[in-house]
Length: 182
Image (cartoon, rainbow, N blue to C red; front, side):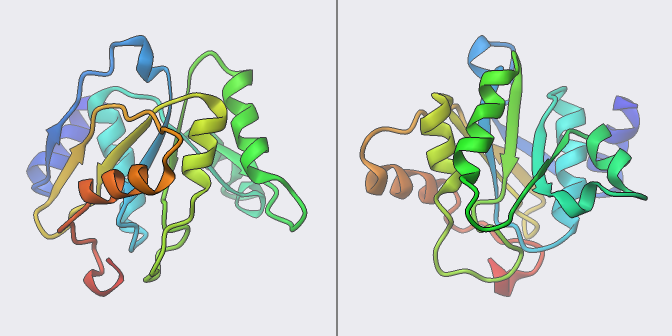
């Protein structure tokens, strides 16, 4: 099915990949992958095609309601794990625990936490990476230029402000599918 993903991604949709695509090192077995800007449902299939092309199994978490019939089987098959989003839950700890339970786990998240316009990113992805001791890998959803740019692994430090400045700089100028939400 890799040939079909490549045909759709490169030929039919006209996308390209820039940056890091060598995921053979052990540092890539566990990571938090952030995809931005997340502005549309189209981001999901671009991400699915991209991970097939680079040969990387990637996981995601979503509200547990999505994992019920009739689509629950599909979301699990493509790497999804249900998450209880009721208040009072320590979601960061629950997600970080997934890294401890598995030998290989790459979690994709949208730092905005929604597809709508936000003025500030959520910090959960950052705290999950720090708690789990794993790197953050950034990738762009640049619909204006039809490019997915992928970063080298970035290990968060104890300087959150500096780290967020570095991370956000990676996404400077990137325009999502719905530009006004970027």
